[in-house]
Length: 227
Image 1: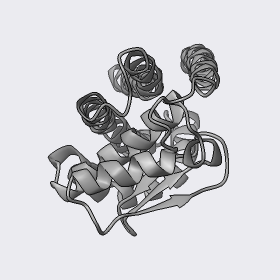
Image 2: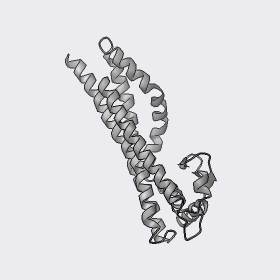
Image 3: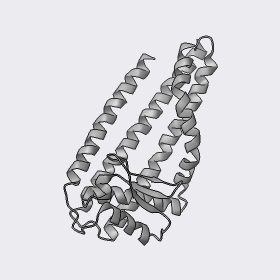
Image 4: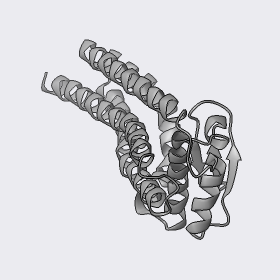
C-alpha cells in the first residue's frame, strides 16, 4: 500500500509541474495579440461555420481554463479569457474545443466511445476509492472486494486512455484549421501549437498515472492469491 501512495505522490508532483507549465504558457501566449484581430468567440464561430456546423452554440463559462465542449447540449463553452481574448492562446483553445464539435459532427469513433463510457465512469468514480481501500484492508478475509475495486478502477483507466486520441485529434484538427485559414500567421502558429501540446500533456500524465496505479493494485491482488 505504501508503494501506491508513493507512486501517487510522484504523479501528483508531475501533474502539478505540467499544470504550472501549461498555465505559464497560457499566460505568456495570452499576451501575444492575434494579428487577425479575432476574439476566441469569433474564432470558434468561424471554425464551426467553415466546417458546416450550425447547431452548436458558443457560450461563455466561468473560471480559468474551464473551456470544454458539451456534446449533450452542443455548446462550446469558453472561459472569459478565451471568449473575449484576442490572443494566440485564446485562438488555440477556442479552435481546440471546436475540434471536439467537429469530431461529434463527424461521429469520430473515439469521441463516441468516450461519450458512451461517461455515465459508467461517473458512477464508478464515486465508489472506486472506497472499494479499493476496503479491499486492501480486508484482502486476507474478502479478496473479492479488491477485485471489484480493480474492475472499477480499470474502467476509469480505460476512459483516461481513450481520452488521449480524442484530445490529440481535436488539437490536430484545430491546428490544421488555424494554419489553413491563416487565423494565425507564421509567427503565431508555433505558439498555438506549443500551447496545445502542453494542454495534451496533462491528459498523458493522467493516463500514465492511472495505468501504473492499476498495475500496482493488480500486483497486490495477485500477490495475495499466491500467498
